Length: 368
Image (tube, rainbow, N blue to C red; front, side, top):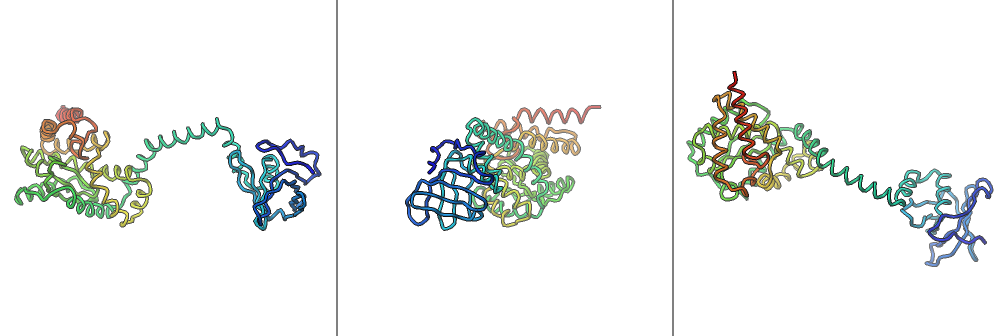
């Protein structure tokens, strides 16, 4: 009887010596009834697989034989009817059988690649590079598209849920007088109407405390928070309106929605874009912490400053109101605190660069 092939080596069998249509290889046979293993000789002829071992001869219809996909350099496994199985190191013979039966064609190629460590290592490096490029460029691009097509109704639901979470966990009721709040709300309503867009703009006053301090930030659907500390820091309503114009810019360019998608992942992105209000409500639980710990990108801050600067130039002929309150905030806050809120003083770009940008807008607006 022909002995089984040596483990972990391809068979030296010359297939040209076989009768056309026949295939032979050595294997370890398990009958499926006991744990005993037998060294066996396997022959495939026509549509029959014949197993011969000491004291045993069994045949199986080839159509009932299942060839397990290759896995690196592990033994190839053939599952036979009746829970019997064959294990062999003769990968050439099994590859020939797979070609004859038209099975595992793609997986055989994968196995050959896996068995060559330079190719496997290069593939791993390629996957890591792809992931890094996707996170840097692909995910932001997808988030930008998703933010633009998110239905306004979903953003309104997100706003209402987020307001409740913020009021419960982070901010306190405002002590700004009702008359002062009403005046600023009227001015903000006029600003929002002038800027337009499918948003439900509203202005909410809250006490920032040690966590938020003098700040303002906008939710995706048009809800804008202003803290008592910012109102107290401002020397005029024009300064507050400059801040609000900046926040309206974030809403209109959907910066917050884009940042949320980038941070909370693709599954959430697709469910919210599809109008799943339940998902929008679940996102709201994570939004407050996100808003209070993240900053907008350089491009987003520049866009919002550009919008605010141009609105100020149109309304007052100067960007000084926003410049002045920015300078005051810089003087008031330490470097550690400046990036604490996704807002007027987000850390990208730096405050001096933002001031220079506002000054350039004013210079261009006044140029003959």
